[in-house]
Length: 193
Image (tube, rainbow, N blue to C red; front, top):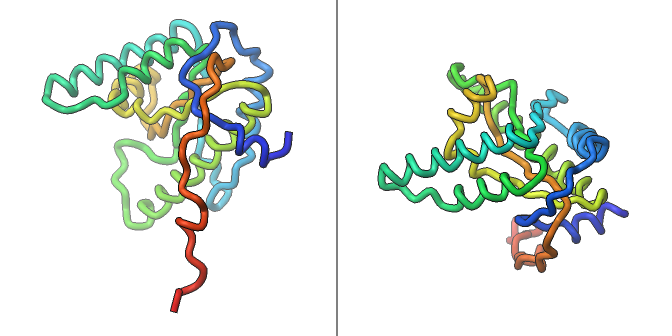
C-alpha cells in the first residue's frame, strides 16, 4: 500500500471486532510511530500498550471522571462514549511525553519546547494510525482521556504528560469519509498583495 492510499483510506473507527490483535502487528505500528520526525530529534514519546483488564480500568476511570465533571455542572462531551469504545477495542495505547513532568513549571524556553514536543508526538500518532491502515487494522485517536488525566496517570504511575490514547483493533465498520475543507480553501500563496 502506498502512503497516499493509507491517507485516503484512514478512518476513525468506533466499532471493533472482538478478535485479538497479534502482538507482532502492534509492534509494527509502534515501530512506525517511532520513525516520526521530532524537534531536535528528542523523540518525546512513550507508549503503554494495554489489553484486557488494564484497558477496562482506563475506561472505568474515564466514566468516573466524566461523572465528576457532570456533578460539578460541566458537560463531559463524548468521554463516556469514548470509554465504551476503549472497552470494545482489543488494544488501547496510552501516549505520554516523558520530557514534560507535571510538577515542573514551564519556563519561556520550556514552553516553546513543550509545543515542539506536542507537535512531534502528534506526528508519531499519525504514523501509527497510517501503519494501522496498511496492516488492515482500525484505530481511533482519543483525547477524551483528559476527563480523567490525573487518575489515569496515577494508576499508571506516571508523573509526566498524558497526550492521548489510541484504540486499535480489527474494524467492525466502514465509515464513509467525513467532510473535509478543500486544500484550496485553507491555503494562501504568498502575501496576496
